[in-house]
Length: 203
Image 1 (cartoon, rainbow, N blue to C red):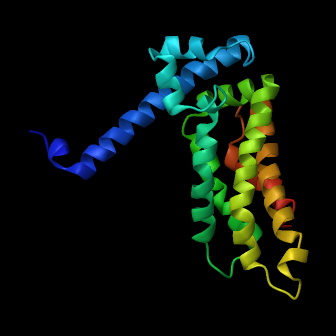
Image 2 (image 1 turned 45 degrees about the vertical axis):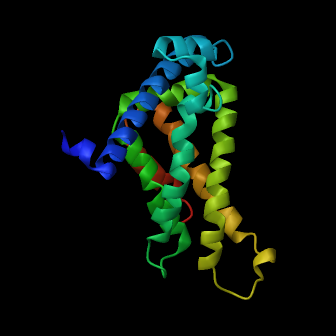
Image 3 (image 1 turned 135 degrees about the horizontal axis):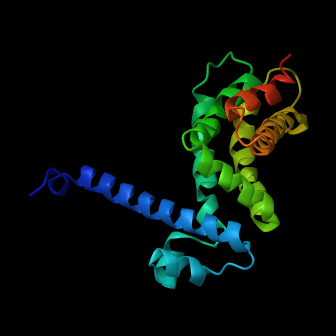
């Protein structure tokens, strides 16, 4: 009997890897279909059929057809918060946000062409773009309290707009970098474009 079967932790890890591989495969299929025929013209049944899944199994893993290609955005929220919280406590929160968003640039630069195709698909599908923005709103919900805890001064928390402004500007800097990255077809690394966008407020 293999070690993975004997070890519950290893089995759980294998199960999670299998689950993630399946989700990645379905996401690739959905991304292609959305790019070819648009999100509104693509059905759950089409995606499930190409992936070899039943409709029931599809909805066991994904809430909506949009979530198929956007679930990774949900998963990034807690990781961004963890990355921000790991930064030095005396570091300016804007710089900490900048460094935390490096998680996103690392993901994109690990598979440039696939991510460029993904960005093009989003731009071509307003429904998907709107859903992406909604999910980024969850990033803000997580990060604003962490930024507020770093702010100093005599302004009561309920009267201080700075944490919300800072997080919103950081995320919009990332979106601006994404837009430029897609427009130049990845000629400039996304990390460098994010630096350019966020340095507007650092210089």
